[in-house]
Length: 550
Image (tube, rainbow, N blue to C red; front, side, top):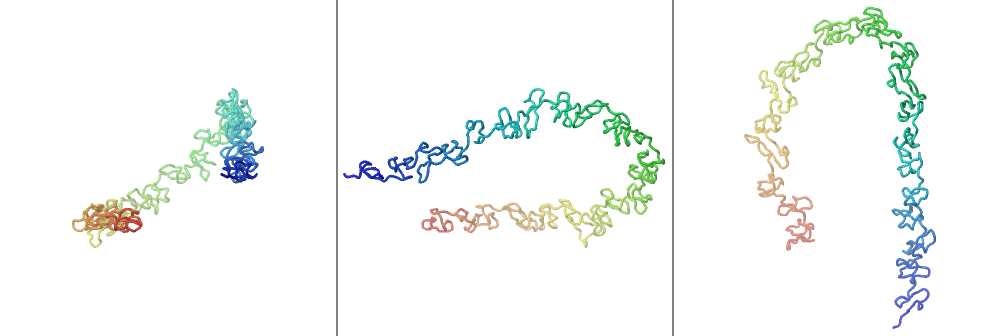
């Protein structure tokens, strides 16, 4: 049998022999079984002719990857944050979650540390940080700053953990001596305390003996010193033995009325006996009554409130208030606080009287019950003075309790003394006068449960009865499907064919459903049984076969 070739030597330089046939060498990206089928300089890798099989075939700084036409070629390695598939694609040699990164652990960073795949310098004392591993060994991250301690127990005896925890970091500091700066008591040496930022022997007077006070300032530690005597220079009350430093900066025995006996007043730091009624005065505190009148005379009072209960002030003398119907000049002279036309009265209006009373000619009277003669609404308990000038219980149902109604008397038929009254509402089946006279709220000759179907709130009920004679209206439950009925209105479904049914025709069903033996069901698909066109989704029923068709 004659063949084209038995070896590559039988083909030209651009072909190879395969299956006794000369085949043209594949270009870059062409399919191949081995490198022999690729043009000179190309290698067969992953079934394609390309420039490389692995990174050894490429220059430094390149990797062997897929290029055009799916052939493998040498590609420059990718920088930090570039997308990658394998580590050899990255200049750093680390590919994490499809991205080239600087490092994976601390061993990749030399003197630096690997944090979030980036080489960073660890923070020193006082540098900012997010967590302990951001700080140098022996430091902790506290309040976002690297610190050498976080609590006093981290320090040696005689030291405390101090510093600015928000900027410079905390560190162990020696306790302060008297007069040295501090923030809290623990910053000071034994027996000292921190006050106003300085270590001292006291913070307040309570830290000293009774005959001493706490003295010092922000630039000097506080200490206990002896209190000052009468007329000594002072700045505060606590500096004086009397406990009073006057506004002019002198220790005195009294200030205004402080420290003096009950019947004395303070005059230039000394206590003077108060003056009797009728004596000359300049100030209220000089008088026994504690009132100095405008005339410069001590009196009982200037205003009523100074006289106490049951009295009023008349010419600086407290007098007993006047009783009802006594002669008066002003309201404040009367015990009732009401002077009308020169006479003390009990009231000006009904609001001045006790509950259940009204004001008539300045005197309080009990309000009148229904049926009693009246002249104004205020005189009646019901506040209704109506027909016949008599007190009525009501004018409308709103004047009555929930279980009663207002029985209004016909003016033309009323007997003497007859008035509108709130009467108990009638029970079911009792004769009635109107809807408001029934407990149920429905009157149709008799009190009933309803008048129209809308009055029956329970689902599936209707109003039945005439309300005439002995038949009252009641809410009846509608009949369920498949039970005997006489008419459509007897059924919950509203459809009756001798019994209550779901449907008579498909028009009684919702969209997408049809009537099957008086029951609404979903319309049927091709091949399902049917007896009418509208029972099929296609609206076509093959009556010969009795199935839905297209």
